[in-house]
Image (tube, rainbow, N blue to C red; front, side, top):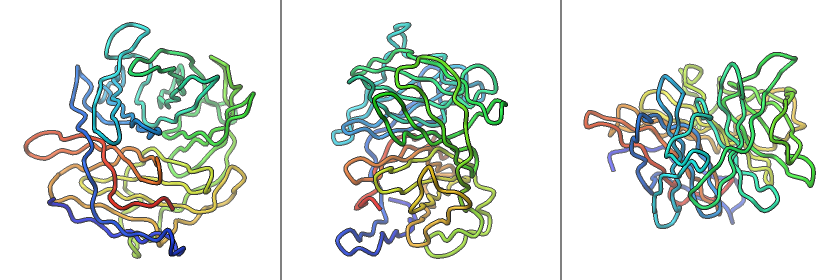
Length: 303
């Protein structure tokens, strides 16, 4: 594999310490219809979900479901319209999975300046249906965050973290609401400038593009990918929660980079953990075309 990969030393607990410097391709996610840009990603217990949208237009999206072990790939069906595309998800920059009354749902941030900034899809197998649209507000104004992750689910309420740039916000929604407004409150900022990546600062890290994020509520660890050209970096933050304030420092012993000499573009768009493994999706391209897909880091043990 023509990749130069950073080594990741995981935390100090010897029983969980691990290193990895490679990843494995699980499945490609080819362009379909006009949808060519990889966006949101989520890792479920059995399947991985990756969205591709109509690049530069954000008017149509498709969703791939990939079996995380076998690599079986299915282009999911929009059961509301019985097509392979849908018009609801905008830029579809991030996904989080929530079970409501025994049914699986995806919540997707659209990054739209008008209309819905969060959309809910109910899915059963490889078919999904539009199930809700919500507006997000911060101090009364439209908020269009680029990241979302479920924090907690009770019998009445879903609590989320949202991320816009380097700032994390809290928001909640009645469990069964199919519409409404979510009022965001600022929680904390994420350290980017000066963050140690493979033990050293990255001089141009503040110029990297923001992507989605993953929050492990049980361990209070947040994973934040950033990208630039053929470089991807994942910053990791320990001991963060909805009650965290101020600026959360990046963990110098956990954050890592991937630089790919095989591709002119290597962008991690989203990350997720399932069964202790770190999965991700990518926009990858070189002179022979696009090579988008979903992948797993080899040897990863959740922080």
